[in-house]
Image 1 (cartoon, rainbow, N blue to C red):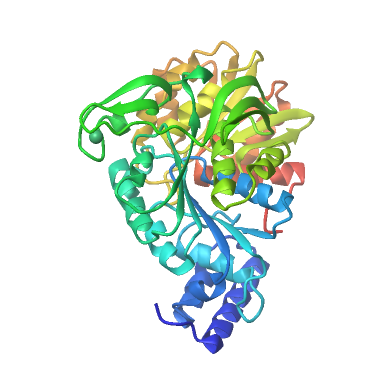
Image 2 (image 1 turned 90 degrees about the horizontal axis):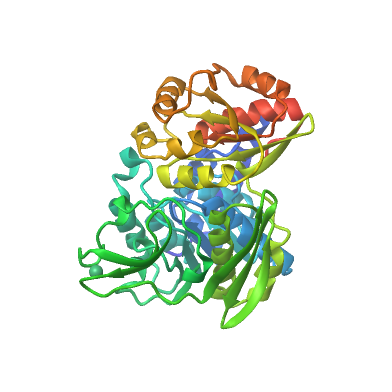
Length: 459
Ligand SMILES: [Zn+2]
């Protein structure tokens, strides 16, 4: 790659900052335009602004944002200056905009570390510029089929990215037969994280995404399951199997709406770990964050301590207070994530309201047929679920799906706009779980923030 020209770097960085400033002043946050402008002026700007930085890139289907925020929190708590692309813009130009905006006017990085969330298909475009020290792949599930063309395709896209970054340490989920195959036939070192059979956690089993081995086409057998296709797998044909994790969850000792307490084995030593975010999938994210900090060459202990004070990221188990009642928002955008959210909300001994929102815009994927394979039956069978509000562009389709899943019309109501929805929620007396997909989450958050006086992340 050509050496960046310092004059162009300065010009490019300045244009990026200026464009971003103007866009935000006019009320538009988190956009790719500043990055497009910057890369037009200097195509190698990303190399220039990331030079000398220690970068962790996080990709995969579910858990990217939370894992990023856990790693960033761990680094900050350890006294390391760290950048996080928290705008949620995780494609090439959006990531460029976030990285460039955090430099000085001459395009020099102001922090030593960066934690960057990266879209699965964008990894191969980004890594040649930024040379990440660590690449975390959280997991792979079927997601946005119209955009990625199926989970096997997504795996291929990520593999292309890994091949362009042979010096990066991989952090992989030992129980995912798909993403774990990224460690095959590459020179990269790998740090594994996972849950041992002793955890005894068993959610929905769904092997449709990982019925056969991506390396040899053979069938899998499992010693135990965690959820979906995650578990103690072994390929009957090539023998590829779950690796023994460097960061292993041994038991889940407590699960509440405020978090979990678990036992982990880290580098052979057992210890108790408090995770200040609830839900089983966040235990995986927590283990991934410890593994990532280890992969950076820092003591795992720093990451362990930080998990006790980690806060939820934008829309990921984010909690709102509406007239003294707890509203918890969980972004759901694919069947595996949806089923995990249902496991969480149905796990309490308390009556509640559920709000389900579905859009099919570009940020969501236009194909909403995935709602057929999500386990709405499990949600609807929960006797504590007293009321369901359905909202969004595809409210009607979702309503029909819920009806099929056993939610009677007396428990359900379609609400046409988010302001009315918030007004209805204000009159409720039960806590509520809000389960929107991506663009409906943005609208719902806006309506809620208008009511509760919270601010958007860029304000
Ligand atoms: Zn195989």
